Length: 282
Image (cartoon, rainbow, N blue to C red):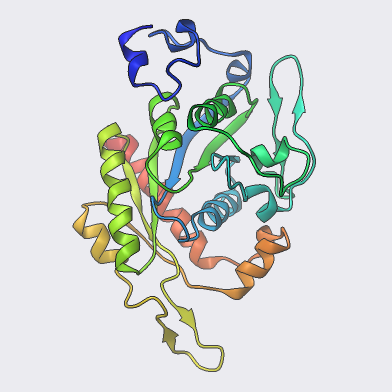
């Protein structure tokens, strides 16, 4: 085993060929061309990261981009449910064929490979990490402008695998107004900086709810701190999002692509601007 393998989350479970300094390019990778790979991360669970990932994908699709979503939350996948994508992924001699949403967003998730969507996935960390890696190496993503990776909470096996083995171009951080959430999110930011992909920006979700009978904002989780948190960590601020029962309703129904999303569209536009600025400055 090479020295570089010692830090791999799959150490001891793979061959030295798969951890060699010259990575093998699979047939699925040869059949794919992915423009930008963006990891969506929070570190903290419960901040609506999967919803934000999904709506970013929808908004990027509204802009005319070809988009895919890699659901890296192996033990708690929700992306197929949100998009209303059901059935099994296909397989051919080249690799795995992801399913498509109604709007043409490519979706890959373990929930599209198991018998029932509520069957538990009981796997140890190294196996989970290997599955995530295979979602990149063995899936025929085809021609994509953006591939969004929905990371699970925390800074463990899956984020380590993603940052070590996938060509991540940048990261979007999702937080909420709670002081506790921001404390944990700062752990994620510090992890990203250890692996050095650029952080495209911070999104503050659940910033407020609009009063149904007036124009007042109700700040359920306290005063929004997104701009302050972005400034503290010297990263761009992409914007804030409200709590909207309609979004939850459409997500439960698998119809998130029907959600009217001007706020998401603006955030996605700022995201693409940050991507371009990073390309220009590199």
